[in-house]
Image (tube, rainbow, N blue to C red; front, top):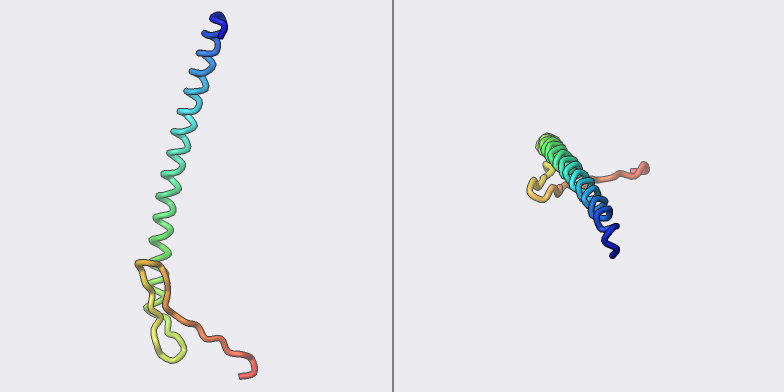
Length: 84
């Protein structure tokens, strides 16, 4: 590498490094904000599902079971044909 261009290349790389650090900081902040928002939405969804599962009755008189750990419902829904 030509020594007279080394200083210019070094300055350019330092600017790029600073720019990348700033972008990393901004993206990390945005990721954290989105993770917090996701957690809040999942808590609300869980509350809604547990409230719905505890009050909703399925045809036949059984209650809908909701597994809060996996977020899966054991509930089966029955669909009637119009001819029935």
